[in-house]
Image (cartoon, rainbow, N blue to C red; front, side):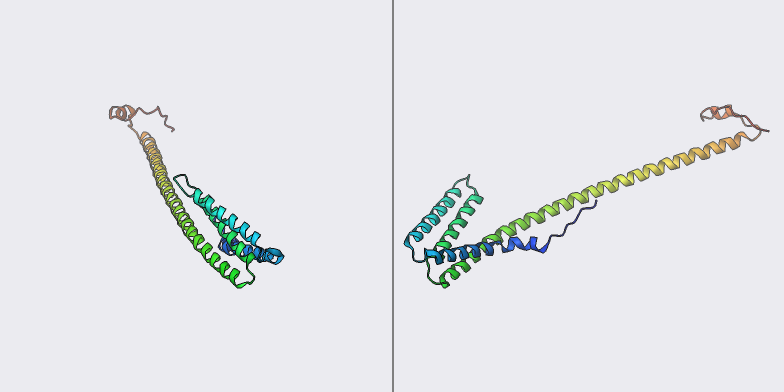
Length: 200
């Protein structure tokens, strides 16, 4: 069996690895733009971002509680809460040092969480590829056994045909000899032969 192998472009492979840094950098850039447009030292904006961040955290906590908790929704809610908190601090602060520190911390946490997901995904991918490989080997073994069996059957049929041809030639040659009696062959247990005419 041949399997089609497709090579992934390096950008396709690198994009998921860059996603946490791109996400936190985007939040920081938008927050600094917001800060330059009036959010710096604005109590109302700080209260709004705090309320939104707390609301997202509560939603994440509620989504993760109980047996029916959904990890994807909880993770999304907690990530939103962190992004809102980072945006609120970066928009309220009047320097770049605190927002950069929070950006670095948020990026490190995002990569820590993403690395866990990537390890799980890699394990599942390797297990799936191993399972597919085992099934291919099993099918290849079955195909080899069937090919051998068919080869043996063909060889047996060839040998049978060769034996029948040799027997027919021997009987034909024997019939050409003087004193050949087909009834004697029938009495000996061989099948009755058709009447043969000798050419002189």
